[in-house]
Image (tube, rainbow over all chains, first blue to last red; front, side):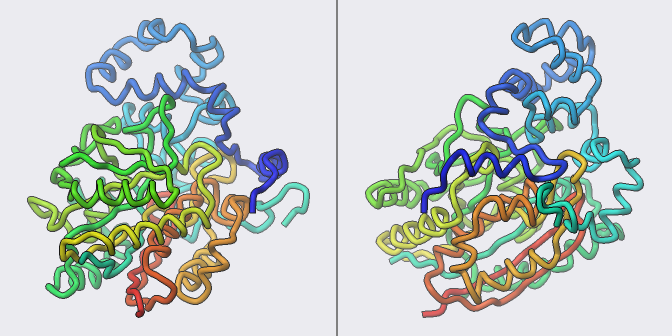
Length: 135
Length: 282
C-alpha cells in the first residue's frame, strides 16, 4: 500500500495552476504563516492596519520579498513563497475581504467575472488535470 | 451500550457561516444552498433520530493549530470548546459542549487499536466544525447534543490516506460500541466537495466526479478507500482533499449503508456544496 514518497511528491508538479502545500513549502513559508496567525487577535489586527511596515518590523525572519508580497496582498506570490491559503485568510479577513474576493485575484479575472463563473457551474477540470498528459 | 445510528456529511464553506450569522439565508444567492438541508433539519430533531453525541470530523483551518503543531488525528477531550476568532471575530454560535467521558474512551480505545491519536484539551473550534452544526441545527441558544471534535490534518501534505481514514472510522465504531452508556451517536464527516482556492485553476468544480463520490459511499466504498491523493488533487481541486474525512464517517457505519438524503449545489462561494445522510444497515 505504501507509495514511494519521491513519486508521490513529483506528481504534484504535474497539476496546472496549483501549488500543493508540501513540507518543503511549509518550511519556506513558516514565518509568513506564523505572521498571518498573529492576526487572529484584535489588537494585532489594529496594529497591522495602523502601520503595516512597523508591524512587520516585529517579524525579522520574514525575507524582504515575503514582506513586500504581504504589503502588496499579492496572494499568488505569497503562495510561491510558502504561504498557505488558510493562513493567508487571516490577512484578507483583516482587510474585510472574503475567500471569493481574495481567491479571484489569482485567476486573472475580475471578482464579478469569477463570481459569475462559479454561479454557472465553476471552472471545468477539462484539460486542467495534468500538464504532461494534457487531459 | 452506545451505538452509531447515522452518518452525515456536509461541506463546511465559511461563507455559509457568514450567511447564517448575518441573516442572509433568504437572499437569492443562498436560498438553493440552504434548501437542501431542510429535510435533514426536520429528520434530525425527531426523537428516534436525534443524536445524544456527534463525533464531528473536520479540519482546522489554521485556527487551533499553527505551523508549530500538525497532528494527523486530534481528538478534543476537554469539557467545552469556544468558537475561534478566524480574523473577523468569533462566530456568534453556542459553546460546543463535549461528552468528555466518551471522547477519552474513544482516544484510549483507538490508541490500543494502533491509531496514535493526539489528545487535545485547550482548543478553539473554527468554521470547519461550526458551519455543519449551523446547517443541521440552525441557530439555537445551545446545540441540542454533545459534540466530540475530531480534527484531521488535510492542509500540510501528506494528509492521511483514504484507507487510513476509513479504518479509523471502523476503530471509532468499535470504541463507541464498547462504551457502557446508552447513547445514540452520529459521525459527521465534513469538508469538500470539489474546490480549489488558489492559483490560476481556482474555482475548479467537478460535478461528475463529486456525484460518483456520493454514489460510491453506498455502492462502492472500496473504490473510495483505494483512491490516491493525486486523484483528489487532479479531479476535485487542491482543497477537494478534505473529502478523505468523509471516509472516517463512512468507515464508522459498517459494511452496508442506506442513503436517506442527498443535496448538491454549485456554488457556495468557491465550492461545490455536498451533503448526504446515511444509515447503517445491519
